[in-house]
Length: 294
Image (cartoon, rainbow, N blue to C red):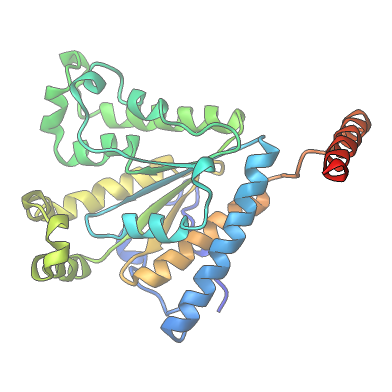
């Protein structure tokens, strides 16, 4: 069964009700072996396209991952990008803002980490935290040092959505292509994955007290995500809602979407000029002569 990227894409202007978006779909592979074979094929193709992307040096690609705790963001990034040359790819994970970061506007800390042309940048969480976590916990706004007159919950979220959309339009105009993934996990699957983290010693480090506390706000987070997806998905920087209850399926969907995005770019290896060809022939003769002398 072919994976179609468009099936997971949130269309601009579309009202988002996450209850209508599946957290699991029919497996794309009939066995573990078939899944591993298909993922390897995706990774190999991605590696080839990444080399072309790096050599052509015209575009930058930014992949943004969001989702509830235990949605599989780390695993998706690790498996899908396993074959990419580290020189052409950087991953940034954004946690609670530092004191320095809080002294700047909410886009500052992520803007510093945007990928260069020819590279792939990956944000594990991003500036979207400022319209997700803070919308669920608006009290955090008061600790960010903003002037009181700016902290108006009736206007601040629309203002931040606008800032985000404007930034992404600016980046698109300057050659950065943006793909945003929301790994859509069910509440019950999160519960099971949390239990695994508690029961399996090697996974204990993944579990924290805050995981349980934030789980209590599940419905609030879903509303925040619905508003965010609706207001910030655009033709040039789309959101994709990826069913995340099945990790293997989710990785295949993510890798296919990335492949489709790279294949849409107009990329080519740099052409050698006639002058450069003559220079290379001169170097070739020098090197051949060295070998002959030995």
